Length: 98
Image 1 (cartoon, rainbow, N blue to C red):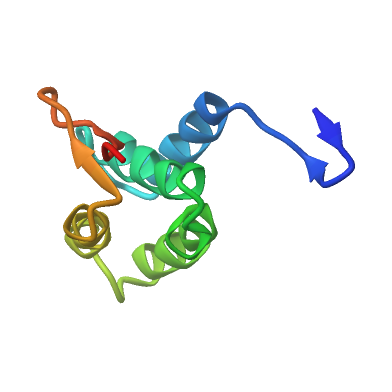
Image 2 (image 1 turned 45 degrees about the vertical axis):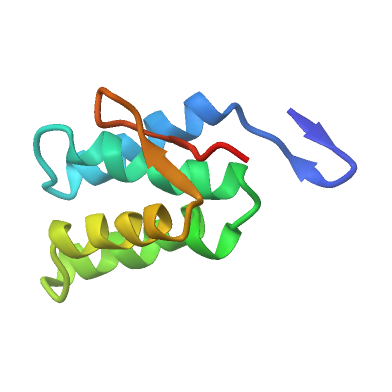
């Protein structure tokens, strides 16, 4: 989809694409989905500095061995501490109540 501002994508499609990238990078279990959902949520909340634009850097660091999955998940925890996202009862990231 496009508009005057550029292409637009469904959030679910972005989550799935990012999840597949993190799974291919070696993240196991629910970690790829947790990371992808947190990054997309940050973008949806208007915090693009903490959104998908970080995926390339995280994936590069994972590939180079200079970072690990725990560090990526720690960045998402920072979003929780800032009150931007929270985990629901299933452990998935959701928007924090305004």
